[in-house]
Image (cartoon, rainbow, N blue to C red; front, top):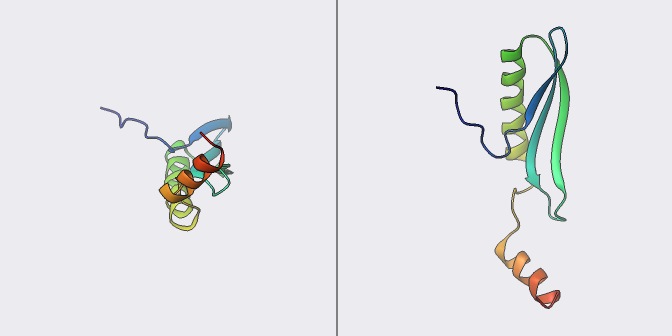
Length: 82
């Protein structure tokens, strides 16, 4: 059975013969903007999947947190008067 796609997995699009466009998502930054990375892989689909997993690990380890801290959210919520 195939593995179910997880949130923030990204996507892989075929661009041509043995050429793939890879997208990975790293959640959101402190300003609430999406953090995304894309690049091209020349090779087979499994090679593109491997490159995607490697980029995803790097982005999640080195990138911003995928969610806002509770304190930050509460301060924003209170400031907006909600």
